[in-house]
Amino acid sequence: MISEREPESFNPKIEVVSCLLEYGNEILLLHRQDYKNEGDKWGLPAGKIDKEDKNTLAAIVREVKEETGIMLSPKKVNYFKKFFVKYPQFDFIYHVFHVFLEQREEVRIREEEHKDYRWIAPEEALKLKLVMDESSSIKTFYNL
Image (cartoon, rainbow, N blue to C red; front, top):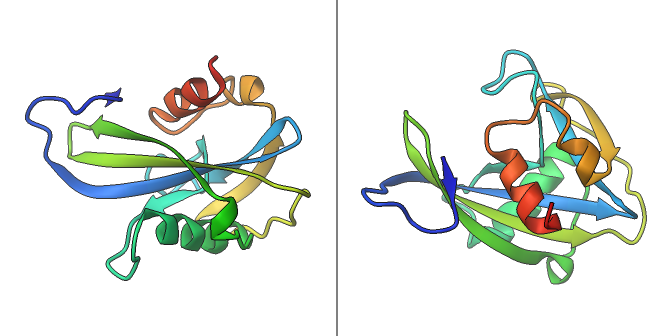
């Protein structure tokens, strides 16, 4: 369950950052390896905030670089929204960022994590098999 308001008895174990990387009218989605959690599904570049990260901005810049090879300028990264996610196993806070790219960057995925990537219109992205609750962040950002 994903919510824009903190649910009762919410006890987050981790915080996660993700980023809507947008070029033209398309966003970047990554296809997870089969053996990964939520395997064989598509999702935004994302990951857990590490202890070394100074803040959520530093975490998303690091995650995007690790997962795509794209180096973001922190000045161009916009914070969008915080979601509260309750899974049966644990709760977590999900921070969503957005970046308008000036050019379509070369994507270099880490094959141990992802098997493919795709630039796709947000409406078309919703037709893919997405990681749990990913559709909510896309729908909310693009008012779909």
